[in-house]
Length: 445
Image (cartoon, rainbow, N blue to C red):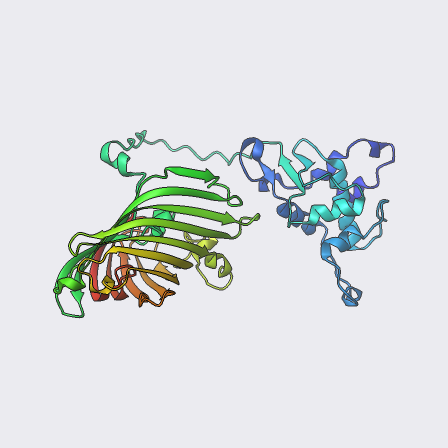
């Protein structure tokens, strides 16, 4: 491999021909993407250059105001070529200048993809190459990804392809099932809080009852954006139905909520794809056929990228993409919520009789930790959820609810979950008091 410094010493005559060797120092095994879209990320290209041309910091660099490192490299040399005996900044400057002059070889093509025309001066072009805050230069990989080494062939009986899903299973595979409509928005079903059927010991009256809680979200009826690209926005709208049943020896204290509605889901991503804010809009009609109440509710929510913010400080956090390796895997979430409820018929629900409408603001917080013992082994987890709604209309509609659950998962990918759960507070819409221990059987999809 001909070094980048050697490429700077070629004759003026040869310099008129594009220097294809300046690009051969890059390792194209780091290219990402498929087909014509394969690229060597500029961040990785810079890292490879720094590995070959490390920057040596002098004590004098700490005197006076500090210029950004990229500017120091860009201004290390004038428009002419750098001297052979230059400092580490000059050597890196020369290497990047050679790459910008070469433009293309049999493996890579360098092109300007930034906004506006490409800078003309040498320092501006080098500074743009190092500027990772915006699109500037793109390195397109021209060769196909290297094939992995051929595995040794072991004679074995041919395996039949798994039969395609048909019938009822195929029909419901695109429907999402979880405990709440916001949980159905998680693309990985193993991250969803499951819908639950419970055997309840009501702490208020010691009455054993069977209760249920779950949401089914239909396939999206409207979508926009690109869900597969982390740097782009995305959204969809899904119809859903939710049902929560909490039996009670006192009928007036029962919860029997049936919701029919639409849920809008929006992803607002940063250009580098590292953080994403998730927005939600809900419009639903809720009824209780036993207590004959009815209300309409509207909700707006914004989920903060807490998982990304805590990646460096919370070991095992699943947003870091290390779920398969971590032993104790954690997830956290924080969602800001506002809602407005119009009670069209309070029925026999005492909490709604003198409450025609109300508006609130609050939050939903969740923390989940799981003991990961392997892909095919049972795992255990603990989940803590806290929901708070503060009444903004002085109607007495403030409510909070705490749910804690110890869970058993037959495997990490299992659709079924078994657990012991404690639920205390108020139902967030009907405002009915809750205080109960439960053995739960859960299902997620």
